[in-house]
Length: 158
Image: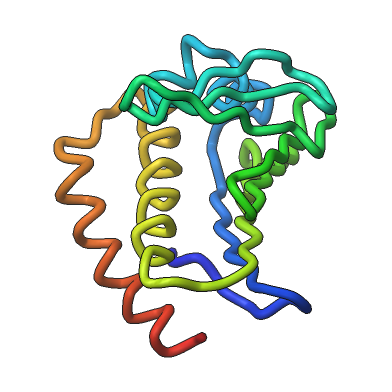
């Protein structure tokens, strides 16, 4: 399912929601444990997992960006800066397993926004597949499919 994009005061919010058949604690490890994190987003590394802590983003050119953790509740909320934007993961236990919500808060929508949204969509697909013991054959092909969907969505919603 595509993210829902809404204007929010001084910007926009893109909200992704996934119903996982796995417990929230398991999903939490994919967001916060570096061994699990590198399986779906190898450029990220948690340095200090607490409010005010940092996540390191490898720019793949020898430099790193420090992302500051601005929202944190053990096993349920992880929010960090992403340039001028914010990324927030929320996990909640459900009878079927857990609900994973990702909200990207954006100051502005640019021509790069559909690329980012497609990227987050694929990241969530990969997390779910890893927990299910499946693999996604081509993340690139998957991304290209979703990029077209998000480009259309952004053009019609913003």
